[in-house]
Image (cartoon, rainbow, N blue to C red; front, side, top):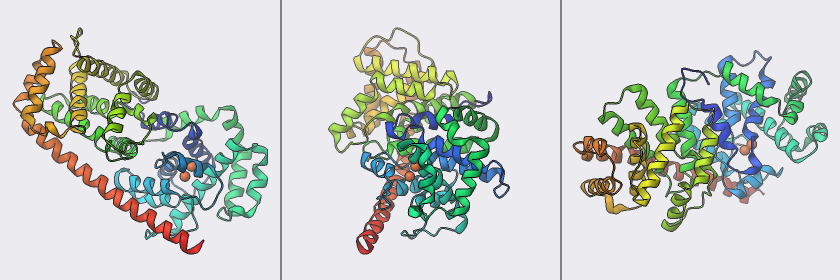
Length: 422
Ligand SMILES: [Fe+2]
Ligand SMILES: [Fe+2]
């Protein structure tokens, strides 16, 4: 991590994918490694394009979370449903810094097809083919002996791979020992060095990648859709109201976004209020906090981890109405307060009346014998803060519903296509 940065977003994503599904561990980073090595010597793509393709390779399966979907991704059945390509496409289109490449994600399995009313240029189709080649090579080597890869690539089951792309891979493998380095694990060091020296992202790009990643987890169902959004918008409003400097404001913002990124390890199956209640309980158990710590270790500034740890501790004291025996850092208190309110808001419509919510918070501070200086500083602006938060979150909620409508529409098109032609 560059010392001037608070977060290495590529590492946060790499670490997070380890906790999604055991069968997909490191798949994205191996695909991006294969692509990175293949692209090393070519001058066909610019440095910027190589970075973009690397990020597309890392995130190509960002829409995958359902077990049956992952089963089909791991199969070599060409009729797989590909709902993850649709969800990934929508995430890229709506939130990523690379919306123009979203079609690459949509067609990354069925590169030759064009089922959807989404035009794709030859240039993007070629990138989709390259990603799919790297994807199939990796999946094949996970499931089979790598020695058999040559005969797999030689069969014409996968007419989608051109001879020249296969030759390209073979030459790169001969020169850089790609598969050998994947097998021994050496590839990780090369990847880390490449990320350190070649990937340059601006602060807004880092923010967009991070939010896209968070939404890929929160948008799995309606109940969790706004979970992080409420907390992030609230903590931003709190930091602004308390006039925190822009640097510590950014730390608070990152701590709020990353606060429970460990939720990626939880089941996305939330279909009613009781499920959501269970989800929240699991979220605040140690195992999820441990996953969050593992994801963030060496990938974000230690002060962010410290804020998250303290905010978790505060939430624990608050939930048990215990006397708070330490003095939390203001940043940790802001993050904890944001999550306490976020959990209440996404859970109970009872508290949409702001004055009632504030009375509840004051009582909470009293029963935990906490210094209420920060809470009182917010009191005057509380109504305003809540109104702004609701308005920002309703626009996120609109995006969520718009995305779900699109998802339904695109998945239906594929369903009709399949039943008509197969
Ligand atoms: Fe995929
Ligand atoms: Fe994949």
